Length: 164
Image 1 (cartoon, one colour):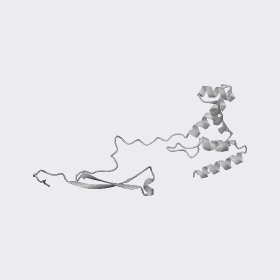
Image 2 (cartoon, rainbow, N blue to C red):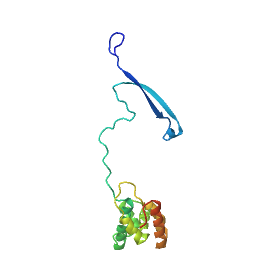
Image 3 (cartoon, helix red, strand yellow):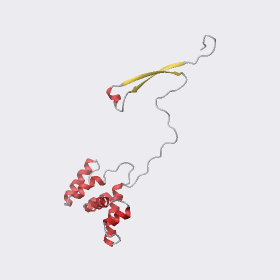
Image 4 (tube, rainbow, N blue to C red):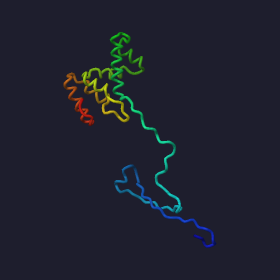
């Protein structure tokens, strides 16, 4: 294509792009705008920029935190029984955490033995584990192990894990 003076003219095309206006979810409400721009005909223009650098490697499976905490509670109980630690305050000083946190973690030892075995046998996971220490706290407060097992089964079913 030549211009009026015989010089070549770049060929352009118009590209119309729809964009969502506003915060996430605004697109569903119909808040859509359009932008029209001229781009060189031979250039591919995308709304999504190309990825830079290497993609992130897949995450390694990790032991769920609740498993580590229950193991730590068992270890602390052994320290108290052997006399290496005189009380929970000594454990807190040694670990650099509060006495309240030591009490919370040690509270997991009140769980029924079957629940403790189930927690200790949890597999390593890449994502959020199905069971958390915080979810187990109210179960550990129950005195009766039968009630604990029922509450634990309900917890597993609510997370879609199945019963123990």
